Image (cartoon, rainbow, N blue to C red; front, side):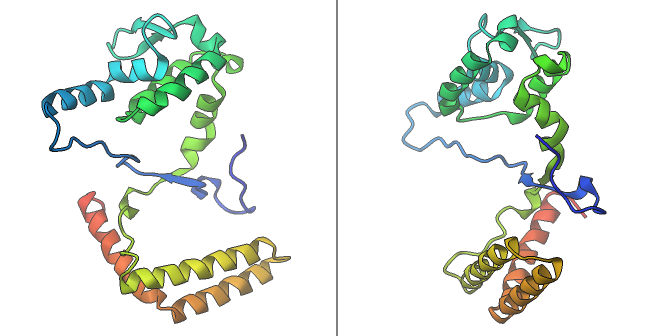
Length: 219
């Protein structure tokens, strides 16, 4: 794992290789056909909480964890947690299909807290680099959720045209032989995008984006 590649002179702390958002990535629903919606909600509530997350992510008590620490929520990991990575990965490859309600904050912060107490050579590879690199190079993009127009709207049709222009320009830029050639490719892409109505699409997205910013209480 390495820090994201960036051009000399740029601030490495402003180079993001991915994004995350505070709304999560999935949705759980209780349909009107449910005979006991309160019971379903109670299960999902348990599943999202510390106990449910511990069981689903690290298996039943006594395997990779046994009991909790003084805070009442952080698991006491067993020696097997650090010595049986293959077994833990196999368990998680199955239980992930039952993770309908995830609590990433709990899982990630718990792993990080425990891993920080271990010697580097005993730390979980993924967790170590999450702490050192990947989390630090992800941007909070919550404010950019749900800003795209409907595909069949005038702005949506423009959007698709612009995406096609972008994909072609990116492919050419990746094989460019100089910075000047890249600049020329991007300049042409910008010109073609504006001709396709890009400004109208941006106006729509900007309005939606600003509505999100207001909802989030940002300036």
